[in-house]
Image (cartoon, rainbow, N blue to C red):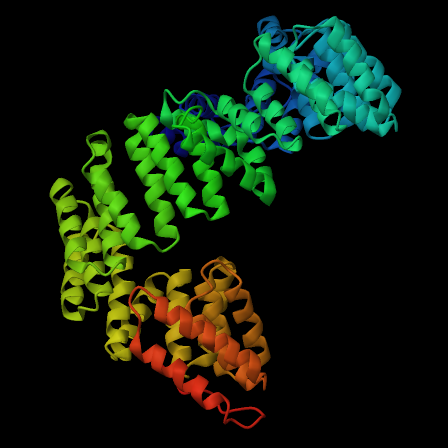
Length: 637
């Protein structure tokens, strides 16, 4: 490859070498370079565009364009192949019989394949011509060509022709197009305002082709959509008994969901996800039922009934509640924010499949973490660390344990956990950063500073960890009141990566909080918000810089967006919003928001005395304040 590239540099018109190198790149799955080389070959000044070589190069390019989804370029390249096949003499193929025969026998340059490319690129007239030539020369399977013609005629609004061609496909009792053929029938009838005929036509087809599970399921789905639930249930069951698979279980689950039958619904969802012999695969299979689970979670009563059914089975000793249904109920309980149920169902999953300990502990511990039950999460991760079946994930659980213990206020225990993880994986930078972060979280600033600097020196090649250390180190200085040192670190990061959202936000916020460089700060924070518009911290920064610029109404709108997000209940964000309401002379709203901020500040894993006192002072002074705009708050580090 090295020498071929060099040769191409020396003679960029050598299209034969370019093609060989391009084809080689394609076999290595390096499609971008393959396309680049073949495009150079096609554009070579020494290549006659009326030769077999030119046709072959376009055929190769058409295949590659199709593979990367560039449909217009694929159609353009196939147009050359199409013209050559229809008029071989114009491209020297009459004299070169070997090249002509190779082109005609290659499936990738068949009229059917060319027609498909034209259809995909919405070159309808060319698609019709190609498919008609394919039918005339009997390329491919006749029924498949009829299906393609039906697609073309639907786009050209020749609906009856489309219906006739599709019927020929059905008459051949083919299944090559799967459910797409039946969906095409639905689309054609809808275009003809005859959707009412769909079930009847499908029923006729299903009676003739009783072993076609795809067709049977499609018909059952139409019964389901028409709310003919008994017929849908009967057909789903019948097809499953004949050997149908997951699709049937998912469809049957939809029936039971609509019929509000929680016991049958749970069992059918479990059947769709598998038997749990391979726990990881079963969890991946849950993606198959994701739509149904989402529908369940949007129906509060059904969600509650399903969880009640699970509790009933637990009370009966766990009968009918093996690994998969227990995991499904655990996930539904997570969505319902029922932590007690989450714990009970995941524990049942663990009991029924001890080999899946690592997976279950991760799910349960993560939920407890998400609901801020750090002490509970720590217990789960500690149990995972000491469970033999979870030893393959021991370093990960030690890391998670260190996080949970730190947030629960157990600094000593957090350090013990992360150091044990370091002993197992001594060269993982994240674990060394985690140790520094634990000191940072415990507000042991000197030790945190020393450790952060050590990590930067020890792992300079790990850019992500170095960045984390820089941001944390900056915040250490800010917390100690050394704003200039904190800014200096972020200013250096900004020089190195001016588009990084985090540094634009953090440095912009520091400027805003001190009431300096406000125009620059707003520009920087806007860049961060544009990159992550749902980041509550960034929205808070945007609101705060606008507040500092005296744009109180705009500031309130940004902060209101922030508090509506899952992480928007932070005391600082609520405090800022209360300040905005105060400036807008909306004191009742300001007081209500400050009260929420005070509650949030007191519930924090490490309540900050200064923040609590500041909010309490505002609440005490609120009743005595006269109406009208107030002077802006002084900067607060």
